[in-house]
Length: 154
View 1: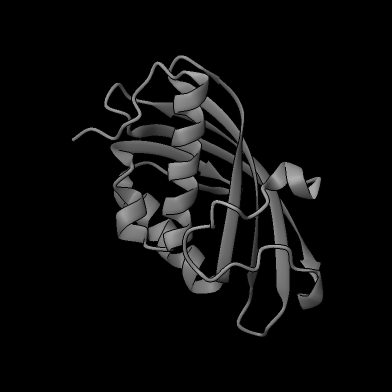
View 2 (view 1 turned 60 degrees about the vertical axis):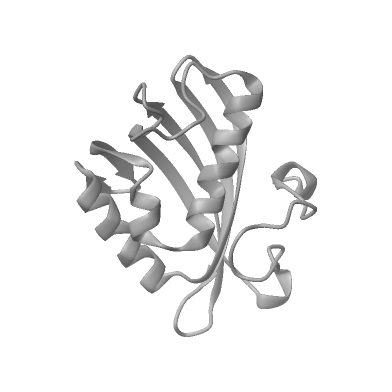
């Protein structure tokens, strides 16, 4: 199985890889998203660690069961060879209706087949009011004409 674009990345292929990752996470489909990772993928997400695809899928299931109405924007920060760094923001609400905005950075390392072998995420979040939300597209893929992180000054 291969997951283009493949490393080594160019500026254009790195941007495409980031958008494909964003689209996958915005699907909120843990089984589908987990297929983008190697069987022995290694993750650090805040204080959680995953050491394989199955654990990554379980993490995503827990995440999207808790983070409702999740919408994410990722932006390329840097790339070289088989590595990509991104910054991102996402908004979600909890089951009590409280909205949050999270900001973070991820460092990714890819296998030759384009599957992600390592994912290291650092995230901070804060409460926001519903009227302060910025990510208001219908659930699913962010429309191509929707502003990105830099457009919001994030």
